Length: 287
Ligand code: Q0N
Image 1 (spheres, protein in one colour):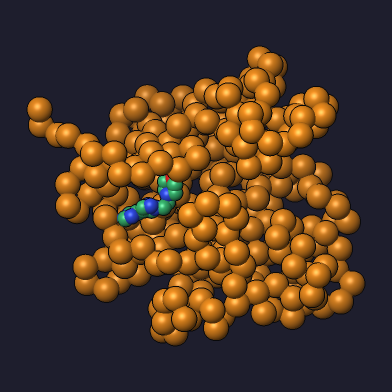
Image 2 (cartoon, protein in one colour; image 1 turned 180 degrees about the vertical axis):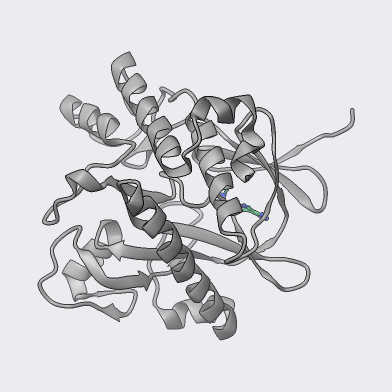
């Protein structure tokens, strides 16, 4: 055999294999989670959409920050990447007030030490995007932390660099997405450090699994927003009165088909590449 891959880790929807000492293989499945539970029904091609979109953004942002991508495999769901020393924080940026950011604001008027104006409502746009790091929980939920707690984990100069790069990436991608009718409300990035000490963007980036994508034409602050990709799944699950604990419900064909169509639509709107062309030749997204 020319290549063997050793399984090293599993996420909710992805698997990581070691190819050799320097390279990993990330394989993104078609599994979908909602309310933090992985459902028994898969969304065909979801893993390919996420892999292709992430690779597209890696290629588009190379001049802002180097990234871990080495190659895309012909299956469209597997990324060969450089093995890095990962930073022990999640680099989150928020342009809008949602999720744990909204919860923290309601409780304290602050998010990760950023004092925000009084009177904001859920899903409001923030006066400017804010960097809101979190710890990487092995189980359960990531915990939002302030600048001092993050500096204790990565050091001040690395913190300042990660914050600047994360904000630069958010400003660039959110503007591109807005031009295509998609609000990038917030996003979570992971960085590593290479053998020369350079900061490198890793994991997946600017996908609907790592970000909140909202349809701009339905944006209405004052409550939660519909999700670009998962709203059919959430609505269906709510209609069942499911308790949002394991196990989750099977999804009917019309929910699967509608959800697949939304993932493909996100891919095509953001990349301007027909998804069929991606399936025929994944590396087309690398430009
Ligand atoms: C790495 N994670 C957490 C799969 C992804 N380039 C890299 N080098 C070394 N380690 C990692 C990467 C990357 N990417 C990242 N684990 C190892 C992200 N997981 C979460 C679960 O799904």
